[in-house]
Amino acid sequence: MSDNAIKSPKQFLTAVLVIVVAVVVGILLIATTVNVGDRSGEGSRAQTSDAIGERIAPVAAFELKAAPTGPRTPRTGEEIFKAACNACHGTGAAGAPKVGTADWAPRIAQGYDALLKSALAGKNAMPPRGGLSDAMDVEIGRGIVYMANQSGAKFKEPEVPADAK
Image (cartoon, rainbow, N blue to C red; front, top):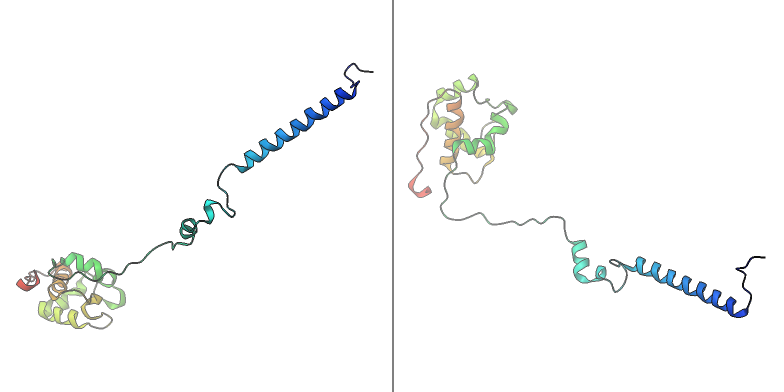
């Protein structure tokens, strides 16, 4: 036999008590470790109205604002070209004369006034004002001058009316 054997009931109770205390301490350590951090159940921060609001909030917001009123600075011909004209006149799409090519020669020969009239009213696949319904006449004119001059014309940029400043 070994010398480590339990020889009395007192030694047996002591051994059982040490084992029970060790198990209880182990359970408490495990419970404490598991309980650290945010809870997602009832009574936790995750169930507050603020937390719920954050989770169901829209990903993006859209705000529609009224157009500014009052005088504004007219856009340049290049800005107008980039905003509306480039889609077709930059590529030649839908039969539009491509900027910088000889396609503009017959149009340049008609003169600035005829080009402005066509642009304001729309022509073939081009909508009135090139689709820029908020553009001033002088801005449409600047866009025409920009495209025509890029294609060989020597048009003078239109003057901005005093009431448009």
